Image 1: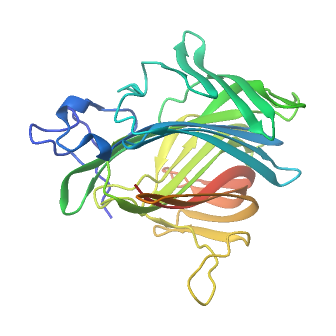
Image 2: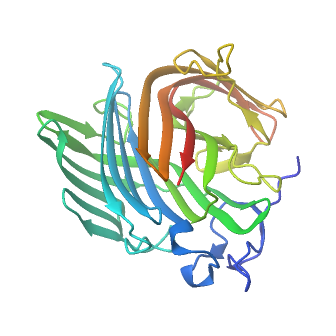
Length: 356
């Protein structure tokens, strides 16, 4: 498959509200503006999702305006105990009123709801995440404060249309491997994120999944992300990020599959997650997955630890989510043909089916 690298700039959509140029980029090439969209407000989906992890815990924070429903969500994953807790506040019919920024590099989120206080801010030091939720876990509140620094040179940006739906599109950026400092408190549990190896449970890293667009009603996707430090054959340490995905929209112009080494991207073609299946086609999520690429440049075994399941059934809004946390082992082949071994790299891999 030929992956089209976008080199133009300007508006994301043309005068008819169609995606001007499907493909991928390493940094955002286009400007996103609700005024250019030719679709009902309830079809517009905007979200910011942050994941921060080290060797002991992961913290996931979501702020999303999905048209006729808004979502503010937090999850804490305990790798040693193999447990998780997710709690969400739902907002009825925000229709764009949650005012997510139109850029992934500027603009802040400040929100106070019935039980949540959220600030995702750009500061001279980096991205500062402040989050508080009342009654996160059986009367125990959640507080989190994290600073993400050392943003990589490259990121994964993709512009995806939908076949037969000319006004549907997805503009997505994923930034992996930012250093994380801070921590969270959930009731009596306090955990500190430290950015360097040698510090408690360190090093800690954060990623951003920034999505904006107009979707069709019924969608399924697969996404995996990994970040951490890895040592090459010469004994040198590298910050490695891996972003893999498929199943969402028309990706014939480009896939979102990339490997990042010390902030520099290496583009892969198509991947398959190799999730074990039962005879009826359902997945056995908690058995090892065999992830491969059609160009032979990726061969990884994903070993699950936690299956973070979430299901919402509100009639017209129906979601089924399996976000599995675990580790990756195997290898990837970089653009120069060198082979990078992957060992015990913290990762998440998900299978999502949404109707909203």
